[in-house]
Length: 87
Image 1: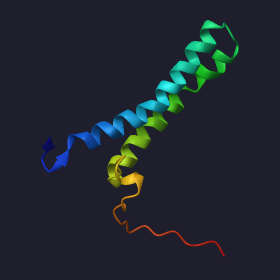
Image 2 (image 1 turned 60 degrees about the vertical axis):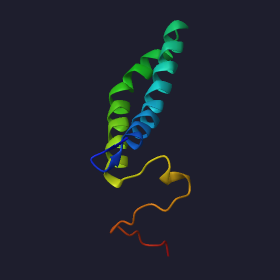
Image 3 (image 1 turned 180 degrees about the vertical axis):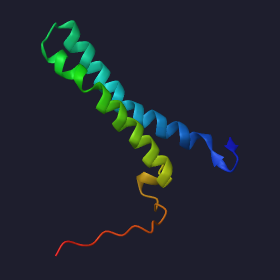
Image 4 (image 1 turned 180 degrees about the horizontal axis):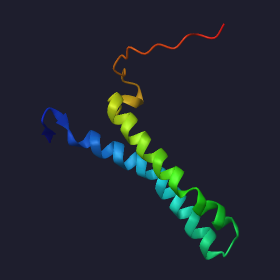
């Protein structure tokens, strides 16, 4: 249902897609922990940067207005930011 002119489904798509990255990391950590691998020490050290990255991705997608439907081929909203082409 639309909420204040926006679709709640768009918000849920952004959260679920961004949570996929964190869930993959958590699964990898659980596997290394259960195997009692020393790799778990390295994996657990990457938790704070990963949480920050997931948070930044959510904020970026919301700020740019990207949703799962728009990324599948529908034109994205135009942005005033333009990148120079390589010479």
